[in-house]
Amino acid sequence: MARKIFVAATGMNSGKTTTSVSLMHMALRKYKKVGFIKPIGPKPVEFQGQLADKDAVLMARYFGLENDLHLMSPFVLQDGDTRRVIDGELTREQIRNQVFGAIKELDEKNDFLIIEGAGHTGVGTVLGCNNAHIAKMTGATVLLVTGGGLGNVIDSAQVNIALFQKEQARVKAILINKIIPEKREQTLKYLDMAFADEDITVLGGFNYQPILANPTMRRIAGVLGVELKANYDQSQRIIHHVQIGAASAQRVVELLRDSTLVIVNSSRDELLVTLSNLYHLDEFRPRIAGVVIPGSSEISHITMKIINSSGIPYMIAKRTSSKVFEMISDDVSKLTVEDTHKLKLLTELAEKRLNFEEIDALLDT
Image 1: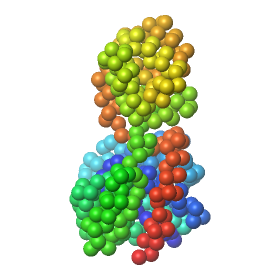
Image 2: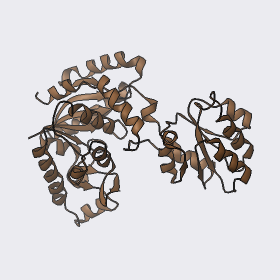
Image 3: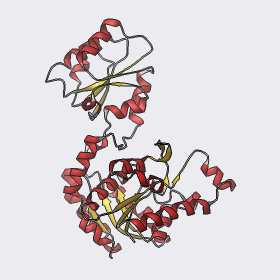
Image 4: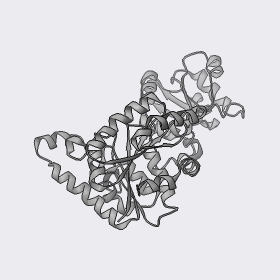
């Protein structure tokens, strides 16, 4: 039987996946066999002919667990499944059998098992298998992951804790992520005070890291569904700022900040040429992550030749500039196994920030 921890969250984008990667990395330093499961998978992708949750695929590929992927993502939520359950075409009993059968098998073959929930605590209720219910039925100790802040952490944590308590699942710790570095000590002090009467340990997670929160060039190309012209290192470049190149070329250059992705309409030959030439200069290369070239008009032959010879990373998107900006702004960067720079940084940070022994000890209380 494995020691089991359930990684829950107050909502989406709180840092569950980064927490799971970190826990896996640290647990493997102590335990011989460490498993992972995402019981309800809301983000289906295909890998080696198998449909699985995106986070499960990341964990399987990064930690060499591909042979267990069918267990790591036992139920993947697809379009229409909610209606099928309500209509009785797909029974809750079928879903529970898939989920708990996979957990049982992983429980038996591992020393430590990470169970990652989906979204907030109530996700999966319509399937008869929400996060709180799974935590209770597996006897896993719950680690509730939240974003940064103070009041919003307390409010959102209490709402989620209430559902776990209703199911009689054990919430033993809250892990605070995305902490503002200069407020770290103060934030953790007051959160300790806020949860002092609830037998819940407050743990400091990761400080806010733009390099983890922001997308790579490769990620943006995926969001836009276009080809990225870049070498490997350029594709892994983290974008810290996005700028629409609507002003004069001189003004756009003046507004460049660290690692900026510039959206330049295909009709703006002079700006495309300027950025391409500046990319040769050491003082500007750190500021220019690359360019997205939207617009319906063709890029002139000579401009295209200058862009290609400069080595500047670029992608061509047959959309309007405003639509491209909207798609980029709406995207929340998620880890994938191709994000090697991010994953390397994450595991390094885990060794500094994550007190695995303290977390592991909570499983005994």
